[in-house]
Length: 134
Image 1 (tube, helix red, strand yellow):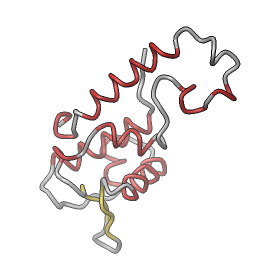
Image 2 (cartoon, one colour; image 1 turned 90 degrees about the vertical axis):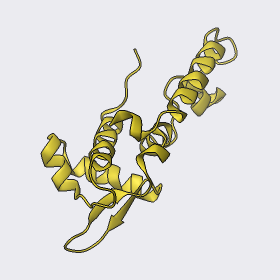
Image 3 (tube, helix red, strand yellow; image 1 turned 30 degrees about the vertical axis):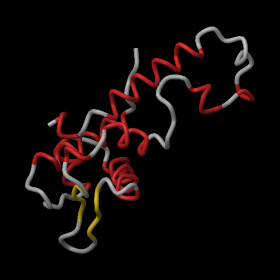
Image 4 (tube, helix red, strand yellow; image 1 turned 90 degrees about the horizontal axis):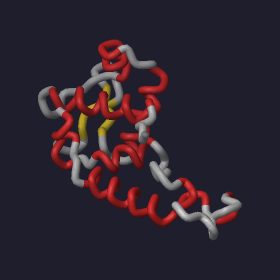
C-alpha cells in the first residue's frame, strides 16, 4: 500500500496546525514539536524546506517562528509532498532514476500502468489543499 513518509506527515501536521489558527499567527518549531510529540530537529528541517518553497514564512528574533505564506485553500498537498520529498515520485521510482538504474526498464510490464497510477494520484493531490485536511 502507498504510504506517506514521516517527514511528509510531520510537515502536513505542522501546516494543519498553522491553518487552524488565526492567519498570520507565528509558531515555533519547538512549540509544534512539543504539542504533537514530533522530533524537533526533523521538524525544523522540514519547516526550513517549506520556507524555501514559500509555503511558510520564517520570522527571526525573539517573537520569531513560522506562519503560512498563503491561505490554506491555496496550498496544494502535492506541492508540500514534492517539496519535502525533493521532487521524488511516490510510485514509479524508475521514472525518476531512469533507464540506467533499472535492469528491466525496457522489458518492464508494469512501468506504464504505474505511470498512469502516478499521474492519477498526482492529479488528486494537486486538487487537494491544506484547507481540506483541517
